[in-house]
Image (cartoon, rainbow, N blue to C red; front, side, top):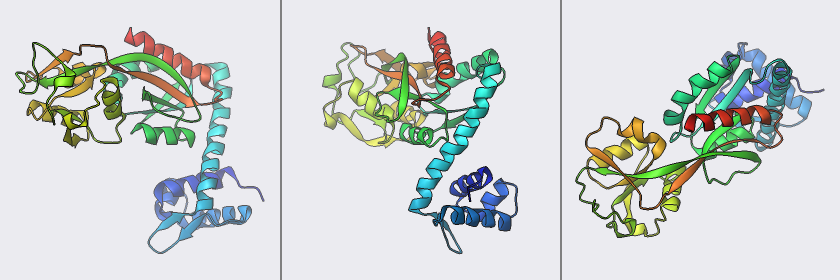
Length: 296
């Protein structure tokens, strides 16, 4: 017996909800019919996919492996439909884009209207999360394309570098931490540099791009977002480094903050990535070229 597309979709829904009632509701069928379909899938594959208890659902190790392939199968079917659609018109149909939080609020507002203007039949869906998360979602087939900051070690993808995004030093006006007459990163006091918490690639990029080797300069407190980071800077708890693309959104109108160009240009690189061998590479390249045009 061969698994059906419907059974694979039910398994994916169960993984997303980890609850038979919620997953069946999301699939618009009764819980009993949903449970039967999952059981029939296990019988067809001759493997237990799910551990069931009264309070929880746990996907087994074998279930995880099947789940990954199920996502690829469903994604391949969607690609098949996209290929047929794109033969009639490029960049039409569904496209799911993953973006990291330190890019999304600054690059997407001007980008999305232009994308939809140029490709009106494109159905664009967005997901925002850390780089490691959206990379895994890309490999699992949950995303078609991701917009990230580089460098970042990623397997199984094609990367299209787009543009450089310089870092700027952000501080409170008349901050006690810096000498405006002579800005020297190496001479910053201990505990003076505020960064995002571990797991945010912006933290790693700032450390690497700005050559921050003295760990004593890094404040032990870390922020969870750029907005929180800048509030700490306004309170003169330290200085930080922000990407130039965030300048207008984060700094505009805040008279307490000022930005300084760094003595040498330090930057992160913005790029697109998609699964290697994707049949939609040409379409993704067009989106990348559009982003580059908007940055000129």
